[in-house]
Amino acid sequence: MSEKMQYIPIAKPWMGEAEAEAASRAIMSGWVTQGPEVAAFEQEFAAYVGANYACAVSNCTTALHLALLAVGVQPRDEVITVSHSYIATANSIRYCGAIPVFVDIEPQTYNINPMLIEDVISKRTRAILIVHQIGMPCNLKAILDIAHRYQLPVVEDAACAIGSEILWNGQWEKIGKPHGDIACFSFHPRKIISTGDGGMLTTNNPQWDKQFRLWRQHGMSVPDTVRHGAKQVIFESYPMLGYNYRMTDIQAAVGREQLKRLPEILEQRRYLAQRYQEKLADVPGLKLPTEPSWAKSNWQSFCVRLTERCDQLQAMQQMLDAGIATRRGIMCAHRESAYQTEAWSCGVEPKACECEVGKCDRLSESEQAQDHTVLLPLFHQMTEQEQDYVVEVLKVACQF
Ligand SMILES: *Cc1c(COP(=O)(O)O)cnc(C)c1O
Image (cartoon, rainbow, N blue to C red):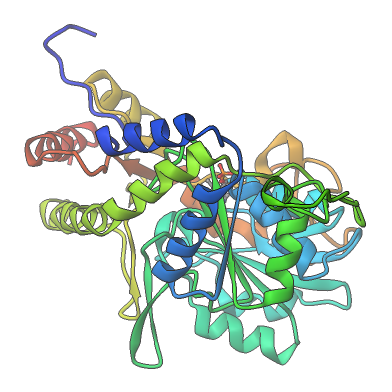
């Protein structure tokens, strides 16, 4: 790459002195793992989304694992979800020894198609794991209506959906309140705010919140913060199999600063997303993302669908040659080698299923989306000039 040529990344966390000072504060305090900063971050996060409880963990994948365990997912159970998601969604089901049952998406929102859920509910269905994909809220009303009829718990994979909102009984509410039973968030740098790595579980169920706290710290009966401050000697016990899914205080201190920046980040992302909509509106054949009237995305990604005559790989390569990073649309787990076994189902009995390896007729919208969409750069610090350049190069790349 020549020195003069600009390089526009797909994403870039917005961090600075405040985060560096916060990390330093935790380090200098002498308490660096899960402690007071984690507790404060949890309270601030719960208040932000409007949940009764928030429990911080090491990342969103571990959050999903604990959420599924809490709602009672056991080996050989089925969990209804989408293949069209980051692979961690389906993996978390397999960590429980359960089977992901994949449902197709709606082509407009890239989210689970609620009309297809009822069809795959079986006696073995234990939960529904929905994904607010790239920050766009799912049709929660329709999904919860079905879940309630079948008395199935709903876990929300809100990895990308911090700050996204949904119209709920006439009020705009944050994703994570939660509207389902438990919502899980990610603080990976590719998401909206970051702690390096990190995750959060929100719920209104005090038993589950207690359970998360035990599980994340080896199933230990007395947290080390309590033991540390105790005036009397305490011996801890281990009443259950736990995990080490802790967030550190260094991460949480950074997260608290990131949370302060969140409103500004959301405003800017929404401004840039709207600007993409305007600049790309009259490009023939290019399908822009749609936001249902009851949803407000945080625009974690801006996903465009290319026409048949525009090759995805070629367009992306041409953009990369011009110094612009893009990403292929969301992956499909069922097309990966890790899933080319009996590890998943599409709701059809294995013997009757005619899916080929990596190809499933029942998941054709998911496959289409993966093959024909491109995620464009979008981040807080992106300038209008940079955005104009992306638009210009995209038009050329597809010879519109
Ligand atoms: C990123 C992501 C995850 C995983 O989050 P980590 O914090 O990296 O574990 C899970 N689900 C979805 C939909 C994601 O986008």
